[in-house]
Image (tube, rainbow, N blue to C red; front, side, top):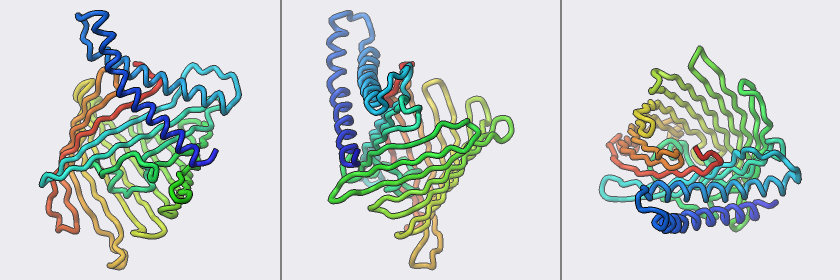
Length: 333
């Protein structure tokens, strides 16, 4: 299947999802009024909409799996996932930016859990490390020129073993923009409760070039409701600011089952081609207040941030970001 065809089908799936989400709440609301006025209608509206969209998506994934594998497989559970994120950022001075992100993974258990179809409206390879680690919107929307679709191969392994995966995808926009990605990763248990992750990505995107990304991550619970996460990333590309790094210190605080706080301190750097590849850095601090609905498929995040760019002599820049995240899966709990 060609990248152009995969991208077209994935975009069609996205439009179907948006149509479902726009139309189903009003229908559910009418049905709820006819049945009873004693119930709280908003809960049924959201739950029925989520279930309808999620069921339609999972049913589509099952049919794709059956078409690809040509096998009668006991599909008791499908790990396919559809994630939609809507963000809006207000900057100091009145400027605003927004973004829409859509990512899917279509699980194909009939292929013995080796293959997955994917669609990404904003692949990491097309963004800087700074954009990946900050919460601010970047005026991104789902466009054909940026989105990629393809297939991923990953052989199941034990949790304490090295895991390999390879992906091939792309899009067609005045020529094929091919994406190749190889990923190697492994988790280690350090002590009784600390985990360490190593991930190495080798990738090529026709519109960007070759690159490699090294990701190191340490997670340690401090309390039953408090976790410390330290991340270090280094990315090298074959041209155009060939080296970037990010060091992120994050504290996750679970206030209640629905409310959470995340404190983040970041150091971001890149090579300066005009100064003998000297690395310079920007800094930021942010706090994110998150609220998750009872069914855990809708989350809302409020993020104030102070950014200190090196090229402005670290003059603080203030922003506030509102993000809504929706997750559609086979899990109804």
